[in-house]
Length: 126
Image 1 (cartoon, rainbow, N blue to C red):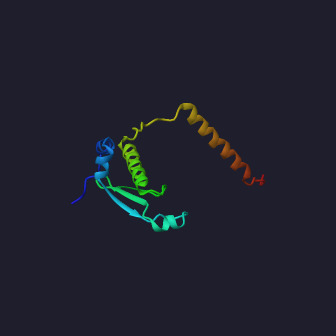
Image 2 (cartoon, rainbow, N blue to C red; image 1 turned 90 degrees about the horizontal axis):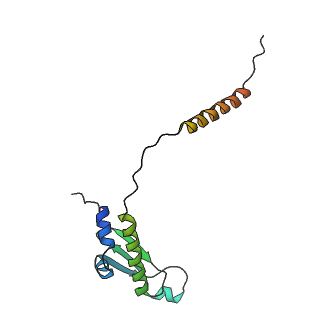
Image 3 (spheres, rainbow, N blue to C red; image 1 turned 45 degrees about the vertical axis):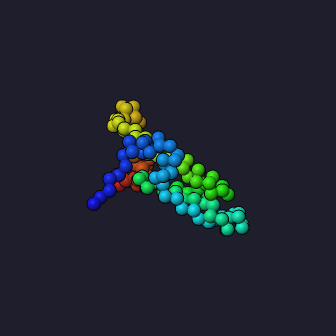
């Protein structure tokens, strides 16, 4: 059975949820952050990976030394992603090139053709 993909309305609904409700729909994983920080980074599980289960969005935060602050950052990042995905893409309208644009293109092709014609051998058999 194939899963249904979330729609724009789903993302908009999730983006309007309170932080507590949004956090309830998330799976949280704490882990050792990598990078600079020495003992403070190597001994504490301060980095947080958060997965919003209904939408499948996964974010990671390891900017702060506090796990609570990183959790708050993850929620903020998830909300940003939800708001971004809640926007419908702009409808593209088919357009035609203007008469002047068409003429400029043809003129450029003629100039190029003339340049290439200058490179050809000339026939001196007469």
